[in-house]
Image (cartoon, rainbow, N blue to C red; front, side, top):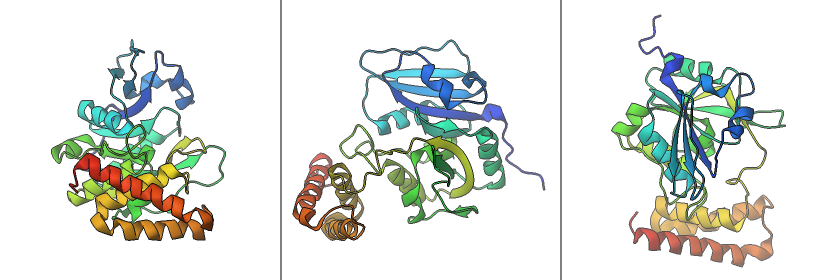
Length: 277
């Protein structure tokens, strides 16, 4: 069967978020199998005092004094120039056939506006996701998606003004859940969001958004609960704290302290959004 949407390598662009860079040394380990200039790349370099410039036609750079991962992602989406874009960070290692796998997935899933893939922690034996077959995402399955797994048709994202919430993500008020909110916005806009099981990238073991039980995560999760559920956020916070106890991420004696942290996150969210949901 002939595919109606066949993509070539020139249709593919990698959107990299980084900060305080003045040279391309960080790109070398990201592409261990061939030179990075063989790929279309858009780099958003956030820095107050360091300028990154490119002599490669395929590598574009935007230097920005803004702070925050979500702002970086949004600027990349606004300035992307190819049909299919992949979001990524500056500390990943790409799989050898990642571009081919991503483009093929979009050819197979013709209706897909966004496809999320799988990744593997560096040194781990198993990929992060246990799913081994493609499926269409829903509001539950998107909880486990990492931003470095997300590829999309940029025209469809722009058409519906789908963007990252700049209150969430590293460098913002609440340092987690930006990818969940991005995908939830897409689902709310009736975009077709799919999963495809190919491992496209490896990432260091530590993930800033996965330190369960930390004050930073509880603070951010509580704010997310309020954004999603309004005043019911306090109930969701209670459920979350008891989940952390049950999983032994926090001690029973920490309940009061963790509740206070969550309440502070809700209060901050209400303050910066002026109670608007």
